[in-house]
Image (cartoon, rainbow, N blue to C red):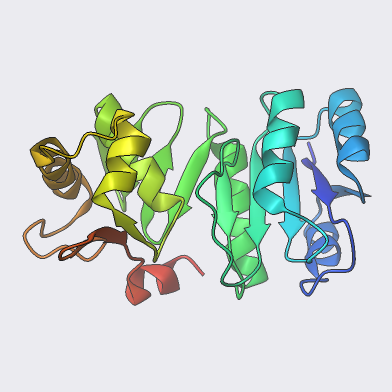
Length: 227
């Protein structure tokens, strides 16, 4: 059975090859130009996947994604953000992509989303985080995360390359502004490293930024592997 994809592009995008490439690959693609039309079509036709191409200045990608998720349940969403664009709030997003990327990389993401039983994953570099099972995979290794480990890693994977302060992480994960004791954060960082890093004492994903907080990096070799 051919998978159906709903593609939302509000205006002509710098990445204008997506629809044509998807159709050549055999997907059934429906192109819409507004949130309202996307909600109507997703509700009536129940596509297997929604792609939001937010590389145009006409669309606020994270906000559009949240709007869609509020009205459309159970359909995975791939959000494509413009290069250099970041957001603290990407609720509802299954996978985030940022140009430049190849069509092969896009197809790999689509395949993994559609093949996922939970249909909800985040992927960055060589890591895959299941939002349904709270498991993280690196290569053939899979580890289950505690609720706080999961939320911490989810926050980092949604903001690759960005330095996240201790205050931000405490507020985001532990819902507190109290900064009198951040040992809990440090301990959870260590636990997450033990589950995602090949050498936790020399991390390549979860880096310490002294005096500020932490940064989630995507190693160049891991990025190349997923192209």
